[in-house]
Length: 183
Image (cartoon, rainbow, N blue to C red; front, top):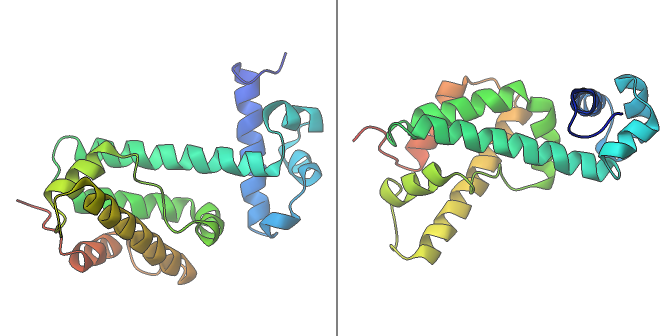
């Protein structure tokens, strides 16, 4: 039986995700149909609906999966040393470049990439980012400002076909926010 937790179900979900992302390169998100996804993924409609309620559910699933991948990546880089900020942001830009079709659409609906679940980035922001105030509320405002700004930069970078390298983009972010990477 093709269930969510067995290997066949996992493979079906991967095929469905890939088909959706493939369709994003040629179609607008609101024009993609379950039928088209199933044809490309070579799965039945019942298989699609066994895993997702509709296309919006699939989009939410992909968004959450990508967000979790980003959070884990950022935390792993910052875990040994919070001064690895530029390395973490460089990896983020590399990840976005490798997933640019998804992020080109995603960033049209969201202000930024959700990094607020990253414990290490929050710790980093408390220690490294210039603070107007040490209050929790002020840190939340500054983190939201940073994430929205980072999202706007990534959106423009994708619009410019990722012409600059991820390293150059990370250095731009570091300079803009006057973050001292190495203590």
